[in-house]
Image (cartoon, rainbow, N blue to C red; front, side):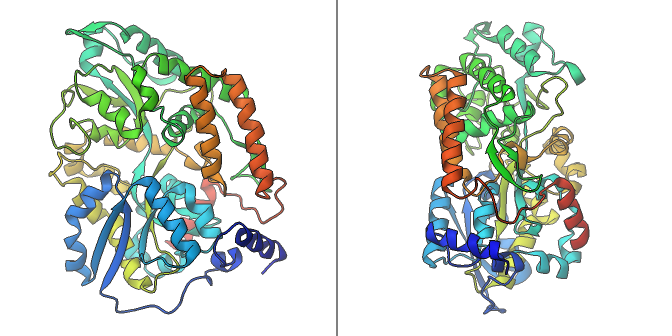
Length: 485
């Protein structure tokens, strides 16, 4: 083990993290090798995003195919992170499979909390068919330091949803190609905002402005499109340099633009989380003209309420489009979603791996997409082959457009997974919220973010960064896919 990795590990322990060394975790030696090879039950902890409901419906197939029973438990986003970190630090985790947000990758892998999967993927390459995964989803969700550490179960990009009936009545059309810019996007919203549509006073858009996490998710989708980078050199350039660069002209333009969007949204949007924003578009009077958000809302807005199975008022009157661009700036679409990984505390590695392969397989994912209990509420496919499936395209006609959104995606740029990301996200969300409620200007907010980021990064030994770096590029992930295939 190198001296730098020893230092890395001691610092993590001093901060209350697990005692496993980063070097052992990244070399594949940090997991418990005492496995129950014939385990007949695996415990699965899942966040309760839409994929959970579809997965639950097809779960009996797993036991029928493998002879292994999966005990599935769901938690909210915040509860999942809190429970996992607490259990890992205390060494009391009872889960064999866990859902992992991409933002937790650095913390979980470097502390040895999750098992890397390169050896299993190479061993079972024919079963896994790793080349069928959309490369951008694997890069964003499932790799860290050149290691495969999870498999995607739900892949999200970001795109635009708009009311076709409103556009038709107001004589509006969506620009195409180079003309589809954020400037023109705002112009259309202004054409809609305040006008009467069949007795309903319209809002141009809706935003998710609850801080810190939903607000950062929405602003980062906008700012990534404008070329914003959070740090000087991370994660795709070595050596890593975490000097904050978020106080930039591009970020200032993005924050000012988002403030304009908030002014064209219902005032209560200041408290809207992810689902509030999406369901506002599809419920009630139908008073929202257009908004951008995560791609799961392409199907969620078919319902009047989250997973309600009651058809919405807009189900036959909306279409989707790619995110606008910031002129000549190359487009970067934020990618997110959820992946399943195996904690190092599990003694049922083989059984857990069977669950990962099954849940992320094209066969299972298609079955999830065909579940009609909730009015067909799953199209978050990470498998390329499913975007060409005629059965699925008949239910989800936007799949071609959604696939293209991933082609322009890079979640590690939009929300870079620094080891202290959660703390940084809290800072950014709070300061952005102050802008929206008029407590400070966008420039004042970014100056505060820069100062607070600097303090946190220095306090966590990331400025200056003296440990091992890794050029975490899409090309590196593509090479890993080729190696494992």
